Image (cartoon, rainbow, N blue to C red):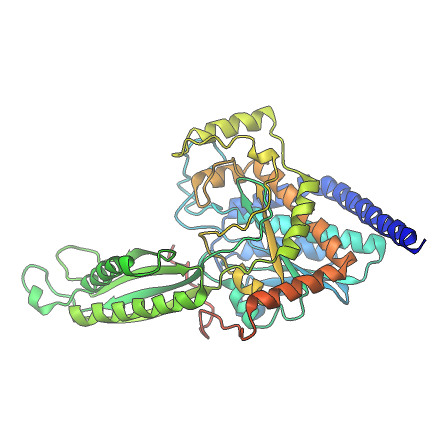
Length: 474
């Protein structure tokens, strides 16, 4: 008899949560156009890392009007904020990003159409990321009010993910110390909630200083800073053969002189170094530093090294990922209208890869342990708080991140539909975690096991202050 009662109570609890999710779904459907309009405002602003003043303000204002308590300018980051609603435990956080990328712009057209008056663009879809997370937080707030739930939902407005490591400074400040679970999402070309990993990443600007002179009349009196940059790059390219094959090393020369007949006394190269393991990354990094110093010595120049950012890899959490996947399956993918289908077909014709990915927008991919080749400052959060995320089809299937095609789709109803899927999935997952604290306990235990017994969190960027001006010249 006892097991019958227990079974009936379990069924009732499951049905209760299902009914609550349906009410949240209806709420988000009613707010869909409003949130899509907000996302498009951010898409149009396309503000760079640590310069997202108006984008951050738009998100904050929306949250304040909805009844959230907002703290702005936290961790020394003017555009960062934390918006909270509710009281007590558990505390469930949702991450929100809103920075654009420099040097790439595009209209909401299925053909290449860069905008001359707009050099930057949301080629990684962070306008959707920020707004979709906001929509989810507001939906949870609606649910808390409706059902008098005890618990706190927090939206973390995190600037400068693209090379600025905004979240790392927030972690370093202890802003996640009382959070029980953290959720995030990202725009993509398909729907999936994998317990994914990523690459650890560290970057620096290597600025070489030499002595200027007339390159024809008195070259012997000069010492070329550009020689220092090129010597470093040459040695790094030789080093590629002698690092673990999982490593990634890439660079751009940001300054190299102005005129061929002047020996440049100032030159700069900007490096990213990546590897799946943070500690292996640091051993490679030490070799890169030595190479820069050797290049300066060999060319008679000096080098200044400024670490720009550093991110740990994502720490997967299967417990949370299973919950997220279940909710994504419940929500499902998106269906294109005829107009959207025509847009998607035109975009697809611009891809270099000929594989046909059509139809992925309507599917939910089965979960897999994906090892991503990119990097994100969400990684640092995940080593301190049980964390999981998802991707939704905000882009035409087959689209690469950081591309004009991503900007284009992100400025249309296709992007807004994918964002809507993410908002529902995030909100449903918060409901599950608040209704079943045992999930949080299991997720925390898994995080501790993955960390290892002797784990101590150390930011890869050290104790440097936030580089608030790192995008000013772009």
